[in-house]
Amino acid sequence: MRSFFSILGGMGTIATESYVRLINHRVKISRDQDYLNYILVNHATVPDRTSYILNPSEHESFLPYLIEDIEQQNKLGPDFIVMVCNTAHYFYEELQKNSQAPILHMPRIAIKQMVSQYPTEEKIGLIATRGTIADGIYKNEIEKVGKEVVLGGPEIQELVDELIYQNIKEKGIVDVALYHQILQKMHDDYGVNVIVLGCTELSLAQEKGSNHQYQVIDAQSIIADVTIDLATRIRKGQDKQSLINHYQKA
Image (cartoon, rainbow, N blue to C red):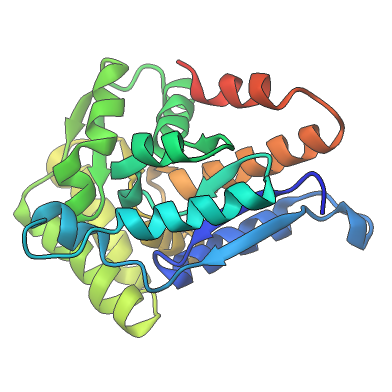
């Protein structure tokens, strides 16, 4: 297969399914051959990212598992790689060093889109896993563009954990009412007009529960659109690296 990209998924599987559904349904097609060429690596047994980041001495690192995936993809030669897990970007630099293909940086691309879409907003809400909050993946990207990060109080994280883990990861369901409650509390109690969804399970919640009035930056939705644009233009012969730089450079 020529002109294809690879997806590092399975972290978790239901969120990866959401991403694949987005790219399949958003690409413009009039025949089977118009769909995108891709390889999906649904590596469901990658150790929990948040557990390791919060307590590395007691939990197995997920880095060796992802490096193994990268090395397998090096043999296949994709044009680029999409990693469908925000928290896994904790090891982005190490993974990119081992990859012969460019790895799209989902948080960086999402925040670049945020600046373009909401240039005057100074306070940005962030909801994510405890691992993503702790490692500063999104905080650093948001502060780089001169914005203030608002996380909310501990009750917000407890609700987010319930939505991500007890609902989506453990039961495979989305509690849309709970998702809307989180957005409402971030807006009403903490005064943010734009909320970054820093977890692909939250992106799944947005897909299932988009009928609300709040402004969100959905990283998985954004990376899906970028994936389609890149894959389509690379297939037409446009320069891969310049296209990727367009999305990832400040």
